[in-house]
Amino acid sequence: MKTSVVYLNSYEKVKRQMEQVAAQVNISRDAVEILKNPMRVLMVSFPVKMDDGSIRVFEGYRSQHNDAMGPTKGGIRFHPDVDMDEVKALSMLMTLKCAVAGLPYGGAKGGVICDPRNLSEGELERVSRGYIEAISRLVGPDRDIPAPDVYTNSRVMGWMMDAVSKLNQTYTPGIVTGKPPIIGGSKGRNEATGRGCVYTILEALNLLNTPVQGTRAVIHGFGNAGRTVARLLWESGVRVIAVSDSRGGIYDPNGLDIPRAEQVKDRGSLQDYPGATRITNEELLELNTDILVPAALENIITAENASRIKASLIAEAANGPTTAEADKILGKKNVTVIPDILANAGGVTVSYFEWVQNIMNFYWSEEEINSRLKQIMVDAFREINRVAQNNRVDLRSAAYMIAMKRVSEAMVARGWIKA
Image (cartoon, rainbow, N blue to C red; front, side):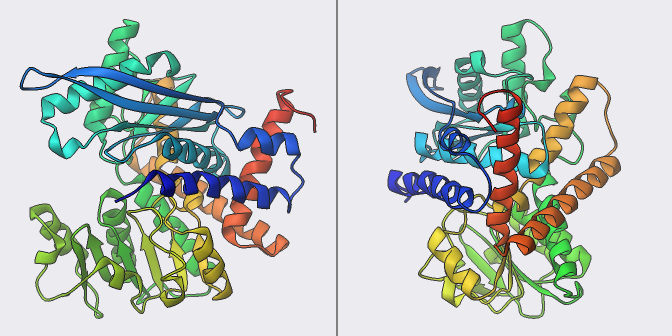
């Protein structure tokens, strides 16, 4: 079970990384001090009528980290272990993620302490509406734009958009992204995080002069991002030898049939996939593979297991899957790590496209969405790789360098700090 200490460490980890990067690049102390602290964090409690007629009070948070480059942007998660340190840390990462991708946003994150698996559909809807109404004074298309995250989805975003539209007495599709397409959602949004990750993997393989065909991949996590990564890599010719969900993994050194794995998962658990060897999630991380994609949990690659990881390329589809101690070990092993603030930036990038389409009230085809996404992800990867090579640092440090420099320049341009 997660504890507040884990998330405090995650929050401190981001701040320490910022300090380390600031020492390597020309960023003022004033900029660093501002970036180390969210500009605004709201804690709310709101009552919800349950199906049995009782009233239950839920607690939630919204952290808005920095809006120097534009309105803040970030997901809302529903999870029993949500706390303030978590949303603060994730909002800081969102600022960096948006800056790396060159999006006109700052970072935000939100969450409600609840377990949606124990809520009926009606209770889930009332929680969703209650939370967005409680933070409504802080959100808006030109203020802060929420999106889906852990245990939230397009249906939840639709309820939230409707709740704010009713409060404002005007149809406001741009209040959230990740909505159903019928009410302003963008085509391609559901696959955007996984698709963007795959674009960076393929670009990394190209730079490493590694052929795509037959390259082995392991995917930890088979949620929306993980299964999209698995399927698109499989379609590209990569041999996906193992995937996992919360119950464990399945392994076949000859390669899995990913469409079949998806069908099995839709019926229950990946463990029911016929002909594959069942393995634990811990064993999956240490398989002999070329590519490892952590696409589920935070802090799963640690000082305890990093030395046993055999992959030469890791793409962080999840937020914060690698601890700082593990990063050092992987660096000594010359493992290429595509950091989370780039690898999983596809979701916020297509959310940006959705926001633009809402504002214009003009919508693009899925082909155009994917083409624009690929250009942004590939350009961002190449820029990060160039900075890494020039400064002789890893890709994570290079990504932080680029992001912090861009946000710092925006704060200078707005007169918040001196150059």
